[in-house]
Image (cartoon, rainbow, N blue to C red):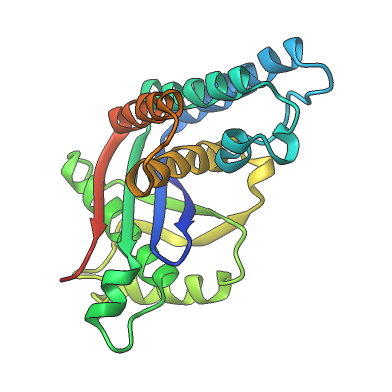
Length: 237
């Protein structure tokens, strides 16, 4: 049994992304151990930093929230180390995205990006398990707490039963049970999904004005891609 940790990232009303980190027992231990170690490294060097602080891509990049006061050098290093952890953990990363402006230009009544991208993510996780010759494997989905939780659970029942016009092309047979929601501040696995997807979003939708920031984002993106098993941003034309 695999566990798929899913998190979202948006770029204003232009793009919507969903990243999923699919893990087995070994990769869970590697990720939790590594992120806890990174937290302790920072705490040993930055006074007042709690080693159990959440790894949150936006706050780490911008120095906000619990990462306010953490020197930029440490924030960059921590982001790189989290991405390397993903690359070396044996986890599978799945990225689905939607070009919202293209979707709105194509369709009079477009589906909500969150619901559509969630469906695409389920389908891609299903495909990755089959492609990796694990046709009997199942994945339990865990997502960050979200206001649409009841709708997501209801939709998943439909996606598992059959293809759903406009959402999925086939039943998602390898998604187990329902979707479980939890707070990301308590889950290192949701955190690594958040960090990976934040930097994929940034790399795909922005041009960095600072060459140093661009180099860091490219390095982090490269590490994430080493774990990536499916990457697609839908832009209907």
